Every structure is written in C-alpha cells, then in structure tokens.
Length: 518
Ligand code: ATP
Image (cartoon, rainbow, N blue to C red; front, side):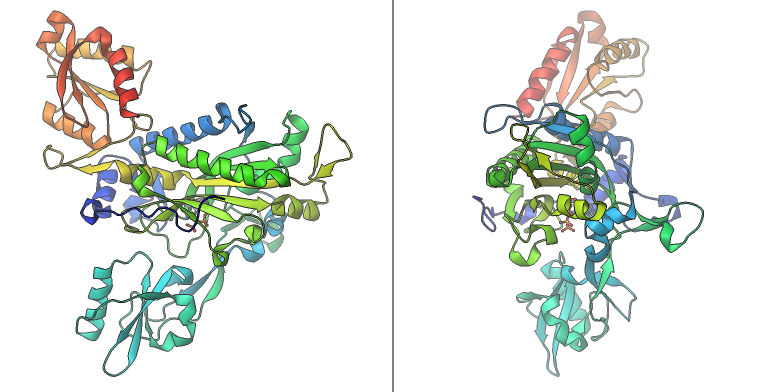
C-alpha cells in the first residue's frame, strides 16, 4: 500500500467552515431531510428524506451502481472488471450473524452517566485534565466538541477559565472514573465503567416472541453478499476476480447517534465485495483504493476536504487483523473540522467471512479454477464499503456556499450529476403569454432532465429557492420570448444572465454541465 497514516492533511481556513445548524435548517426548509416522526417530536437517530433529499440520495445511489455494476471501471489489464448486483433480505437466518461474528462481537464499549442517565460510546469520548486548587479533575467530552465548548463547560464547573490542553482517550483513563466529569454532568464520578453493548436491533419472526424466533435487522449489507456467494457462482458466469455489489438499508442501535445523518440508527450503505486470488490482494487493494477516491472526487468533493487514512493496529476489525488491514476515505465535515470523519472504508477481509459461513453452514464456499479442477480455494475479499446517507451529507456540506451577495444568502453548489433538479423553467409572470410557452419548454425538457416548472411568486424569490436547492440553471420566459423564441438563462454559481435561443437550451445545458463537472 502506498498510503500512510495520514497521507494528506491539508491546511484549512476555519472561517470557511459552514455552521451545521444552518445546513440542518436549510435541509428542513427546502425539503431535503426531516427528523423522522417530526410531528411527535422526532426519534433519536432516524431521519426521513423529503422530496429533494430522496432525489439527491437516488442520484448518488444510481451513480455508484453505474460505476460499480452497469459500467464498472477498467482493470489493470485494460479490460472492464466484472461486478454483478444483488438485493438481499434485511432479515436473514440468525445463524448468519453468529457466523459473521456480529452476535458475539458487534458491540461497542459504552458508559452510562448516573447523574443525567445519558449513555456514551467510550471510544467516542476524549478526556482533558484540568488542575484545580483542591484536586485534579478530568473532563470527558464527545469527540467532536470544539475547544471553545470545552473551555465553556470547564469554566461553568470550576467557576474560572482554564487553558484546554492535550487530550487522552477515555479508555486510557478508566482507573480515574471518580475524578471524571461526564459530558453533560455537573459533578465528577458519575460515569459507570464501560460495558459491551450489542449494536444489532432484534425482532421476533412469527407470532411468538420467544428466543428461538429471535432475528436481527442487518447491521451491514455485506453479509447478504457472502450468504449468496454460492448462488451467484452457480447461476451466473462469473470468474475470479469478480465483485458482488449491493445497496440497501442497515441498522445499528448506535449508543450516541449524532451529527445529523452522519451517525444514524437506520442508514444506507453501498458495499461491494471483491473476490480475488490471495496472491493478487495487494494489486486489487491499491486498485480499489484509487478508484474509490476518484469516484468521490468526480462528484465534486474537493481534494482538500478528502483525506486517506490507514487504520492503526488498535482499530482493526476481527477480519482485518491479518492481511493488509483497512484504509478509510475520510471527509472533513463541518463538525469534525479541522479533523476528518469516515466516509468509506476499504478493507481486506481476507477469507474470514466465507470460511466462517462455510464452517457454520456446512456448505463448501470455495472457488474452483476452471482451468484446473483440482485447484480449489477460498477467495480473499477486498471490500469498499461506503455510506450512502453519509455520502449525501458530504455532498450537501461540500455544496453549501454562503454568499451575502444574493437574496438567499446561500446556494448549494452541487455537481450537476447529483443536483436534484438540473434546471427550472420560470415564466416571468403568471400571464397567459408566458405560461404556455414555459409549459411547452418544460414538457420538452422533462423528457431529458429532472426539471422544475415554477410559476408562483416573484422572480427573485423563485431564483432564491432554486439557489438553495442547487439547481444549476434557471430559464426565464418573458414577453420577448414569444417574439424571438429566446429565453434568459441564469447560471446558479455566477448569477450571470444571458439570452439564448429556445431551440439551443438542451445543447446549452449539456455544454455547461460538462464544464461544471470538470
Ligand atoms: P464508524 O467507525 O463511523 O462507526 P464503521 O467503521 O463501523 O463506521 P463500516 O462498518 O465500515 O463503518 O460501514 C461502512 C460505511 O457505512 C461507513 O464508512 C459509513 O459511511 C457508513 N456507516 C456506518 N455506520 C453508520 C451510521 N451509524 N450512520 C450512517 N452511516 C454509517
């Protein structure tokens, strides 16, 4: 592997970091993302995608599917690689989760606060030490807490300002529990020692809620792929190396869901298991690592906000302890800045999953070399596993551009391929002469692009709405349009307006979108 830990750590101007509160408010105001069960006060860790959010999410989903399954990339030998799709059930035989290690091991250490009754993931807490006149105190904070917030909390508890110094991990400080002030507590010593907490949601299949009817909601889409390895091998004409890709919901009973949709309890993943010969692992690991970075960059995530990081030994999952480990593609989210948060992991899962399912099910999950029937082996697996909903958040954060020079004060600078609407057709007034022509243009254009026909309100308000939902172009129809068959086009990013012929609208969009995509 060519990457170290971390490879790139670009400098950043902190004043450019948008405020998460503003992003969340825009997402609600314009119909991207709502709290689930909003009218009942929400439910922690669950989110609904509104009319524009679902379009954005589907666009990202479809681009990933195209990149992986419909037109997969060209491999090191100059030929397109081979990847097939799958859509497996969310609930599988519970034995599958015993074999995969999720029933026994899919747990995080968590601690409870006796004062506030709040629960935290121990590995997401950081500890700072503060010298106070009577005793040394330790303050626990959730990872992303900023220095200012930490200083304010310490001041509130101690009644004086202190310098915030280096921090340690909570797990290194478990012997000092009596001296630690929990993130939301007023006094020290309220945290319990960490205990393991299984993150899988369970349910009962059938009429009786008995232990033998217990089943789990999948915590990752990957296992459905391993369970179908033999079915795919027997029914399709795949030959090693090949991939099986799947997009779908995953559920994790996260101890502390937070940061909007970044860490939710119900979310979507885009995962691909790449099966290859153990001798070729390094080549393919490097290949997928490069391809997956390209994918995110091509959707407009700037290289300054992306970082590649190789997991340290202490972070490795059970399946990655041997082999080449895991490397993450990380994005600088506003709540992690100046640090980064995981967007996608690329793991060498070795032959862990196929071996485990083979042992537990009694079925042979091996590959037979078609040129040498005696050569049978269990393939190794490289897994690029990305969050679809986390990807949506990265796209929104990247696109969010405050601009005091426009009425909306902000616009979403989406890459045209993910923008929910590619253009808006706006009759200048609701007059008879403007609306029919606008409708005609809309009816023609909607066959080719996702477009909006927006008739109501004054034109300024309509431009502001399109800016806030990230529509690249607005075409306005006025009196002159009926005379000389032209419209005014307004470009989202520059607000520049120009007059173009109605018949050239499609060519204009094609050309401009190609320029914006560069
Ligand atoms: P984390 O360390 O953030 O808990 P992970 O390493 O457990 O993530 P994986 O099991 O590798 O995550 O899952 C693959 C991808 O699924 C992650 O890179 C992330 O984009 C997404 N993902 C994982 N957990 C969540 C969650 N609770 N909410 C939203 N997306 C998630």
